[in-house]
Length: 389
Image (cartoon, rainbow, N blue to C red; front, top):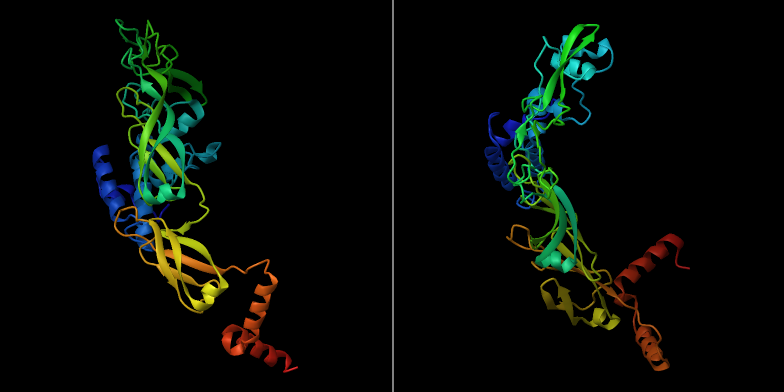
């Protein structure tokens, strides 16, 4: 934790920065350090990860509150603000001090009346809707060239009948008289420390701070309804298996006027029978005949952009690879393209007839070790190892 930079410092914003300022700073830095612009640059890659981590925390209201209060420890999944069990867990009285109200909340469900203030979430505050996830399967060529697809999701939408307030048309939402709209009520409890005061969710309104005398018949007072939706998604050329695309504002509707969440679409690229890829380079294996390898030949090579002609040089050996510059996958930023690596292998003919066999034997008998560089070297090593016998 100590080695991590302050998240506000990472994004270059102040601690009072609002969501729009944080998002603008993130987009600028994410573009600046994006791996596509800095291939094989480990420093840029680490900067990009750091920027994403900072934005993930500061763009989430709940996580940001924990970070502001406890620092990096507050957003650690294993962090427990209440400390350990028994009096030994009260480390707040030493150098590792924590807010005393959190200690009492751990034991008694709320803050001690004289020791600190109770932190509760305003039930009427705008809340962002939840993000949704979907998986989309596409072909290799669709990933290479780009494509427009549709994904089906089921999401919560604001009820059109009541406008999201949950009340039947023509009726009003009422403030809960028990909690005064706060969603919580104060309770007192006798403990070995004396009388402790704590806050708990209001039982009358279930912590919502409001009461709906006549619920909306369409959403049953929830203010939201679930609908199926088909969304069009533009997949850019060059996307790879396992990458994702976010459809902003297409997730679940927010509450109390809050913004909708996103739909994060995970891309799954089906294996191709012809091509494979590593990064933005494409690989293809092509069979050639023995004669083509010996004499050289013009062959047809498939690429993601169509067929091209390539001259295999005379004396080509099995497993030789040739590079076709700029015939690979287009970069995601649209500037440039990878290469295509063509690996040739010699297919040995089968089921020769008598005439073909005789011709091949006559051809082979006329060759010597001088015609076979690798075989000559192998023979020489055998002689060095076992002698000339």
